[in-house]
Length: 293
Image (cartoon, rainbow, N blue to C red; front, side):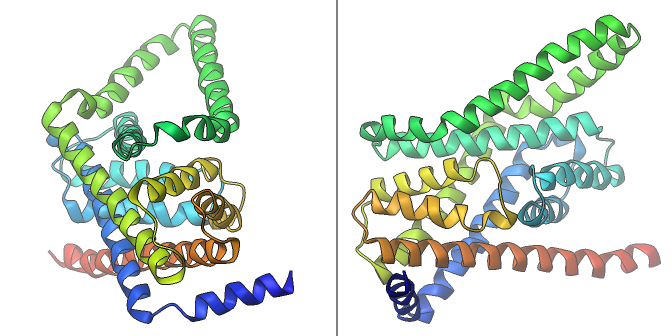
């Protein structure tokens, strides 16, 4: 155990600073593209600026690092709702629909990336990893689907509220039926995934054997399956284990895989904190100006 830890530390200490700097820039690029994806999905009548959208997205991602059950996504809904008050009214239900559409495009673009990389041969492996979180998600959705009609039947006045909430939620999801908006969102999402893919490739080339794009996509897919359900703060331990497992499937030695996964996670955390700090400073500097105006 001590020997393996020493091997991982030796591998980490041999990574060139230039490679780490490049990976950090790619992580920031990934965060920016993800914010652009959400901005493209938001209803156009809201006219929410890209800066305010980035503020809501990055702070939500930052909160997701430290809270369970993706509470940062709920914060995104609230921040988008509040920011839209200065432009055009946006209900909480519509904001929720937009965040949900963002998640759908995010997951869908990863699937497209997997298909494009030719991962058909790994289908059985990926299915084995997704059974547990998939079953839990289906159970929650199914339970909510059974609960809402029951509430409507017990409380007739709730029917109007449910009908209005459904309309507003579908309004937030409208980007999925608008081809230009959907293509823009998918383009930004694919760009974000490719930035993370290149960053992972840079780390692999600096620490271990260089991997082919399909192998990198496999590792990335297994990583995201592994962290679907948060079980620790910032997914510490789970993130490294899932990514290291994916890398070892492509022949990367265990010590090198752990080193790559550890450094990749560290850079992602630094990038998220830098992004959240930057937009928070922008927001803090802007508010006094808005008050004076």
